[in-house]
Length: 222
Image: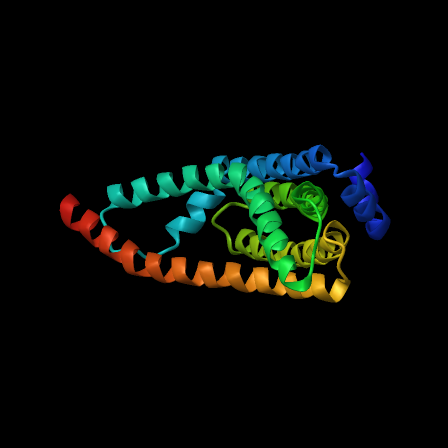
């Protein structure tokens, strides 16, 4: 697979991806990443890891309500795993395409889609590793402290792969939009700030709305 070359020759690979606008290959990388994430989520859900972790939360609600919430969370986890990477691919590409304009960037959106798609290759590697971690959590007993610790370790490793992806986005965007690494890094910082700001706003909204919904659900079940 040509995109694998990004591991040992990231600059040359991303430059060629931008020049040749290899959107289809970028789509393939994102698709592989999504498939691995989906498989990992299915293992965690069917293996009882997700349910065991959710059961550890102390909710003052009737058991049938808690059971419904856990089932909804399990289904949501699988759906999110199947769609998250594709949504991220489009969102990152759009944000980088827009923010690089402030730094004089010029280049096609297809080139940006290609390089951002290629940048998901570290997450493919992380997805393969995550499968082994998920299988280990199931084998160790989903509710055990060791299983939870292994899950946290997998999360920490995932952060390392994420920062690797960010570096590739910066390099790739510089070629896709014909700007320097500094300008590309600045665009990436602005995009990340916008994403984190949106997450904070959504988090605050959920923190207000969810307790109200849970309280109403608990009252209705009594």
